[in-house]
Image (cartoon, rainbow, N blue to C red; front, side, top):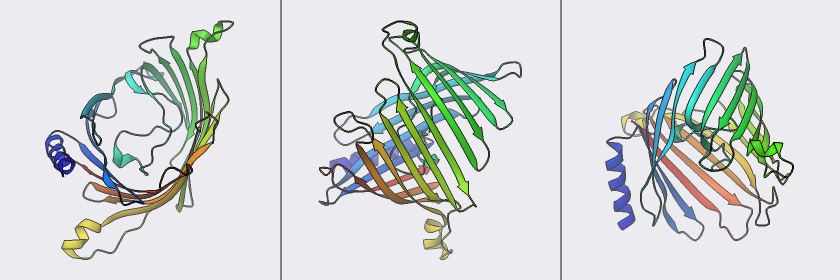
Length: 294
């Protein structure tokens, strides 16, 4: 009861200032239930600048506020775009901090955040990205990505050289990874997203795969009482995400999930998802995510 009251109070408080509020509810097969996460997203700007704060609350943890992104984009005399500030690496799938932009609840292995200067050059349907990342400690990272992007198809690849200057030393402490990704909508029917990642240091490989019904479907309007709640776009989906096991071996464990994403025409969304973990000690979990954009 105490957690529920805190949840309601948090929603009320942050909704005064937030652009979006999201809540995750988890239910495992022993009928244990609880609010797994409550998150408020506050952002200003979108295209040429962005300041993005996240407010988190999880069970038995204090409320946490942190700066997700803060960057400014400028035009380099028509040659390219230059973005400076805290932002995501140009590496594979970039999961948005905004819940309404993400199809699934289960998080993907995502590009990290960092303080960097990013150069983006667009040549027709080809896009080139180069990131120079300066960490708080250690050597800087260098990241590059090239992607062929159309409305229905994106094929990309990226590489990150962690501790970049260490690559010029005989026994340098080098880190990094490379990846290939595909985002394709076939015949306006099924959207397929896939990504393969390999870490340079230990050559461990992982992948993710998500398929969804691309156009979605609408439930017939059933009057003011029910219709306003149910009227919107429904998209079923399924996927699998692999990860390292306890021994550090790639593809040693995985999550398989299926669900449905409902986007209302009145700026709310609901996601229902069944998640099965390959670890036998982890029970199947039913997840619900609710959110609203202000």
